[in-house]
Length: 162
Image (cartoon, rainbow, N blue to C red; front, side, top):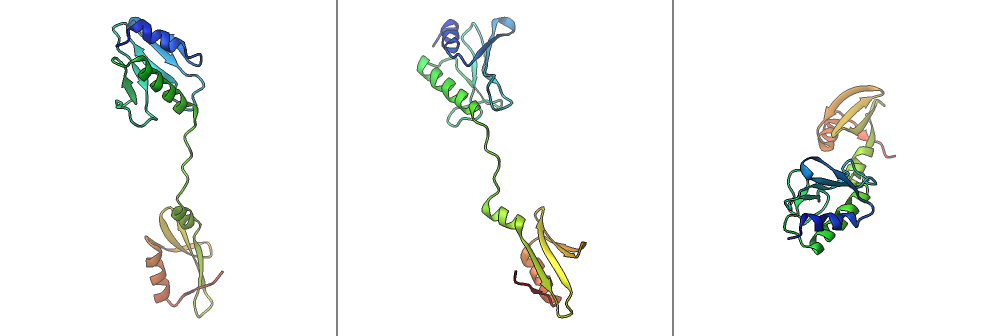
């Protein structure tokens, strides 16, 4: 087990981390260049040897509900690997959620329908439902496109080919 002083020396060797002394002799280290709201990499290093490192964006580490790993019994190599991974994870912004191809297709889905009288309706996918419009007026809403198509067929509408 590393001593408190050894842990401090290791953390001090990372120029991108800023030391912040907190209460009861504890020390935190912040990564101000973090691309996330989270900036604390090392949390509550205590003179008794206890302390935590943030690993909330990493896989393979047993974290608590705040994403922290207890480093009390870490070796120097284990601590350095964790610190390197933690800093790297905070250096990259989270990728924005990209809708799946199915969801993108569904969001873009809009079909036009016409009956024998020349009346036109538009079926649009919006907010996980399918809405049937006559011009700007909402006529009906359906949970699935199949349900909407079945209704349109029963009412004598056929889909226009775009």
